[in-house]
Length: 226
Image (cartoon, rainbow, N blue to C red; front, side, top):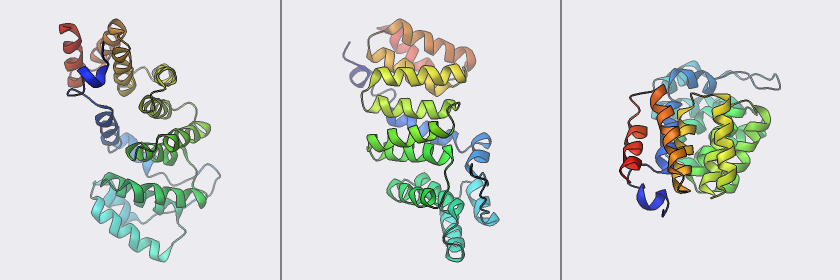
């Protein structure tokens, strides 16, 4: 088999997986993680409520303007810098995004979610080594996060370190058997290796958890036609 880049690239790509994960982070479960107030060291920053409300309703342009205005008064507010970076990332400015994350980290904002988002942003910029480093920092802080293992797996997969990618995806699934993105990425990896039975097994598990998962169903149908 020539690999999924040859035979399945029109169906699903690594970039689409990254976009999918960003979209998931707009939901309620991820918003509480994104808008957290307290860092691991115990230091607290309070962000502007109006600016955060703009972020929660996904009005990122307003969120940027309001956070910039707030930072004029509190330039060392690391939480606001993090939020501002996230907003720029949602609008596709990943250079600005990682720059603001780095500033927040220098000020002491060291939570696994900032390093997770930093890893995703560096991945979008094709700076894979930095992406891997950021995900490892996220795992140093929270090794029990399925998302952090998934992110590192994506970075390894992009770097073509496939065995390490497989390990991270499997760890993510062990922590959270319902982590559908990890299972989908693992199915792509197995398809790339020509292990179609393993790929199909992961896709069927996804459909058992979520029968409406169109990407998994479409990929499984393609495999079964081969």
